[in-house]
Amino acid sequence: MPSSRLFKIGTLNIQKRNRSPAKAERIEAAIAAQAWDVLFFQECLLGHDEKILGLEKLRAEFPFEATSTSRIFKNGIWMGNAILSKHPLHHVKSLKFRHARGMSQRSALAARLELGGKRCLLVSLHLGLLEGERNKQISQILAYCHDNAKDFDGLVLAGDFNDWSGRCHRDLSLWSHDVKQWKALSAPDDISLQAQPLTYPAAFPILALDRIYAWGACSIERRLALGGPMISDHRAVVADLRLR
Figure 1 (cartoon, one colour):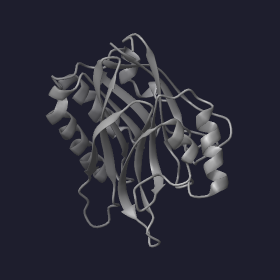
Figure 2: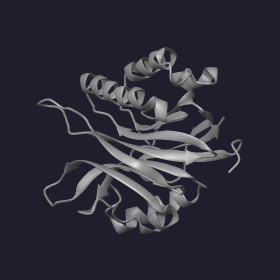
Figure 3: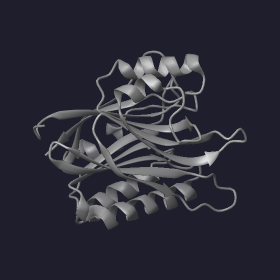
Figure 4: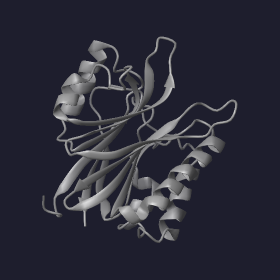
């Protein structure tokens, strides 16, 4: 694959809606309308084998599936993060966040992917509702990325940041300029919060909770939130990923 090719990636918090057949079909129809290469999901309902429930058509189109569970419900169904990819995923790792009393169980999902001759580290994340836990969670993710940076040409973080205040974005911007393994984001608008489209609530979005960031050999040329029929309480974000 030529390195100049654009890859379409996207992220969506599906709000545990994939268990209902009717809702799963709506999710599949909305996603299938886009020519995706890689999809990041949050709040997926997962079976005992950690396979995504109810999205068989998408799983057939995206044969490389990775999941990480964050918590279990009384009926034995798990909820967690997922990455669906048309390209092979390797060395999948669940990053279990440390949580104190009163904080929700959360996790992130890291996977290795080679696109256009470049080695990419992908992280699908769903941060907590409280600023204190978000700060600890993003610090844990960045520490993992920093420790493994020598193995990759680029990094993509995508998911539901729940970052009402913009604190996580400020932390990421500072980290972008401090980290030595990956240079700062390639374009000025990439480090602007205004470059992230509004996604929540889906009907009348006022907050950019769902985001896609890229570093190093990975750069984002376009981000937009999908309109159309609402398939979650969040809007999906789609982006063009270029590899340098």
